[in-house]
Image 1 (cartoon, rainbow, N blue to C red):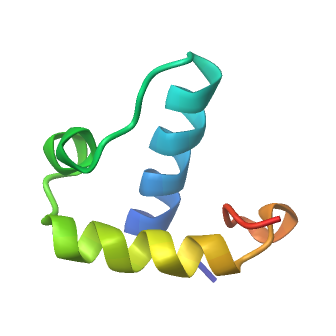
Image 2 (spheres, rainbow, N blue to C red):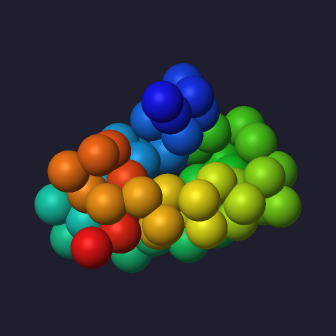
Length: 58
């Protein structure tokens, strides 16, 4: 089960990709209010989870 922050980060990324926006750590930091280290750790975790299970992996 994903945390609220993991779901929020995933949704921001998916929305930005659908709109054709460039995603950067600074952008994610500004939109979420979390530091870059925490964002990197969550992104690493989300990439290991398949999309059908709520992640960003294949």
